[in-house]
Amino acid sequence: MIVGATFDPLPITPGDLIFGNYSVVGHPSGTSADVEDTLHFAVRARIQELPLADAAEAYAAMDEGHARYRMVLTV
Image (cartoon, rainbow, N blue to C red; front, side, top):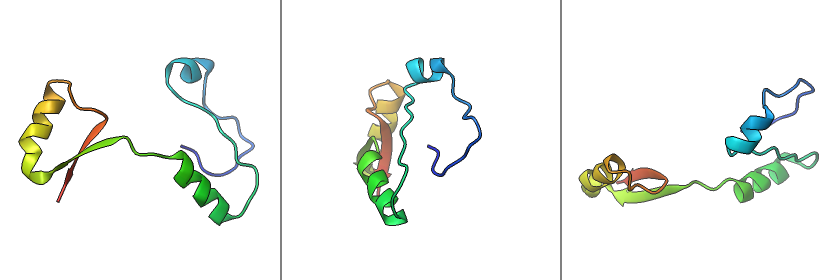
């Protein structure tokens, strides 16, 4: 994620956009509060939460390739 403005070229190739699940989105105006609201709307964490007591279960799911998104242990 790049937040800010630049007139320099971005190091993104068409292959990055096609195969890398990247996208380019612009937000040309607004206040910093508007930008923050937009980011909260657009950015969603893809996580699977488990309590710390289930750490062994979380590790096993990751090790076996069954974890959905990122495993996050909560306290």
